[in-house]
Image 1 (cartoon, chains in turn red, blue, yellow, brown):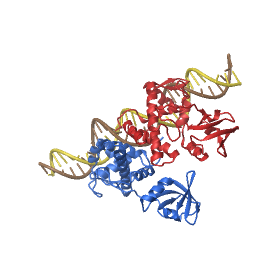
Image 2 (cartoon, rainbow over the protein chains, first blue to last red; image 1 turned 180 degrees about the horizontal axis):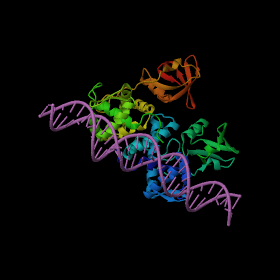
Image 3 (tube, rainbow over the protein chains, first blue to last red; image 1 turned 45 degrees about the horizontal axis):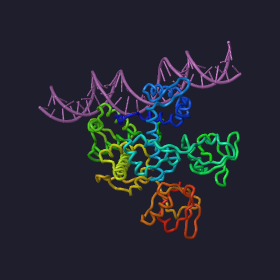
Image 4 (cartoon, rainbow over the protein chains, first blue to last red; image 1 turned 30 degrees about the vertical axis):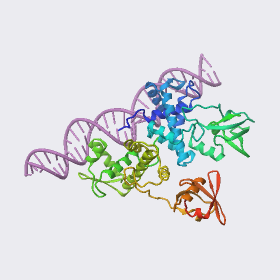
Length: 218
Length: 218
DNA sequence: AAAAATTATAAGGTACACCTTATAAAAATT
DNA sequence: AATTTTTATAAGGTGTACCTTATAATTTTT
């Protein structure tokens, strides 16, 4: 009694994760990175990757990593779009807090067919970005952003997005007042932290978090 | 990697099906009827029924049928409520045809937690029936709430409801971002106002309004 | 009371996506 | 070139909820 439709949830989740984590379209993503993202054992990841590869969703280059096939990328983008639309619905219409919305959208994105999600888009006024500032496919980003960790000391910029997203980081980012759109200046780089100025305040950000905060250098 | 939360989807589905198909609270529902409803073999139904019975969700009377335990009935009602609310959302706000809405709601009802569905209820104007007039079971309030006016300074809590409702207050509450579900902290009590913090903002609420805003102190 | 029809239960099987342990192969480092 | 580390693969296991076939127990009908 499977919902019949099409692709298994897990397949979609893997494809979207690869899309989110990869460095670029042709850069293979290591299975280790995937394993860490999902919290699954390397063996399990490998097993699933073989299946996805056999089914043509991805290209698997042993000892190197995986890239998405054209088919796989289309599925990933479609899922990502549904995810962001639900996120917007949850935050904009139901006032669900940011961090929670991400998690719940992760379940809703699989529950409703595309037709429904497109109606949802219309209801929301066809938004082009999710609450975290990440563009909703198929629209394109018009800016170029850099991972906060790479931004040189002294540079000024604008927070563009938090990616990859995780509930914990989202909560921290919110607490620090580092929501997408806000202006920052990088004050100093330490061994384990980056200090940035947000308005009048100084905030120390662990490198771990700095890895997922993206900046458009101005 | 199970969403951990609570009851398995399948358990909820069985309990709701029993609720729907049964002739009355004390009338045992035959396993055959259940099997036909789901399209599963009698053996599979029987197997699942034994599990549900062992876990206390239902009472099983061999050769006779099953009834819901108090626990099981509560779960069935909660699921039914979520189902009807999603149905109304799909038909009322997204113009999804009824037949489809029923099916899609069957997936959505499992995807979002109760907190979200309650916000959905508010968004929809707390409907008391589904599009076909079938009553929506009321939400069981499991929390204890206090009038905002009585909440001590420094306390954190969650807005549970606006009661009694009036158009003016609802407008204000919406403008302040104080819709049910949102988290607040009481900052100070003045002669004619109460200052609360909502996310990053401070909001001054006239005592008059504070009388109709209810808080679950956390 | 006997036969027929239901309902229960035992036994064994499937798919899925995880798991661990152990070994083999390749890549990176010394 | 040898060692260490990373990645791959083999083998066997888990739980859930479905499946079929076959037999046993009970209820209903004749």
